[in-house]
Length: 88
Image 1 (cartoon, rainbow, N blue to C red):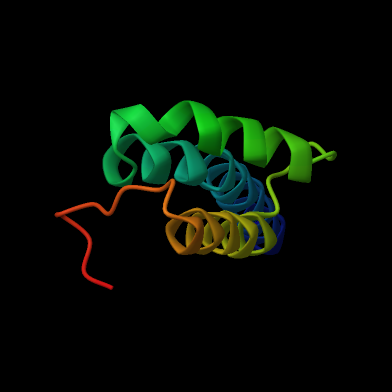
Image 2 (cartoon, helix red, strand yellow):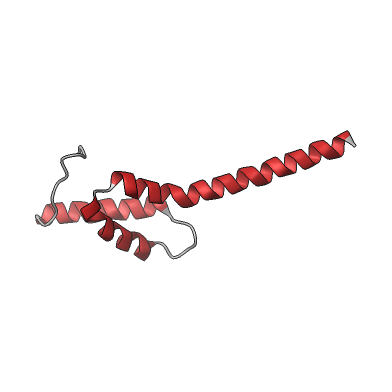
């Protein structure tokens, strides 16, 4: 009986851990965008992320690399403004 209870607790803990990780994976990119991206650049970043992401989950690193490359290209062309809050 005690072994069965331990098995149930381990399975329940595993399910809860997976659920928490899924919620964190879904909300982390949104929190990063809300807290780190200036409001005037959020629409462009949202368009970029939507174009890059075709799956249910956000592929964060490729999207961030593309966003950084797009920003560098804008800065090189003189059309991007430099943020005073970000050190480069």
